[in-house]
Length: 160
Image (tube, rainbow, N blue to C red):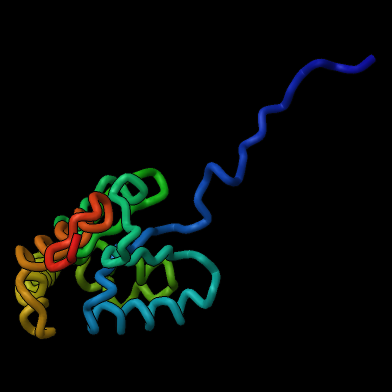
């Protein structure tokens, strides 16, 4: 006699293989250097999914709803359950996932963590200028103009 009992299965395609999705600015030379370092530590294991927010195909909907401007202002990451983290917590989690948590472990201490968070905020506010790039408002406006051009076909300077 056969049973009609169905055993529920969990599709592995529903669960991401990564432990953390890191959103980074692919046009920032220092950010790219850090991502290259972390990517080497990941060694193809897929523990960290690296998402370049500067990529023209970046879509907030696929990445925790974090829009380009927000992602450019501070580093963000998305956990498999959809939780969004930012600032120094992103580095703590990424380094922990890659087995290098000791590097940021001291930032878990309340006083040191507060100082590290404040230093990161200062860095984030100045990183564009320090890397020779326009300010955030200009970058966002340029991206919007490019997106409008691609979507609407209305490019400034083009002959129609």
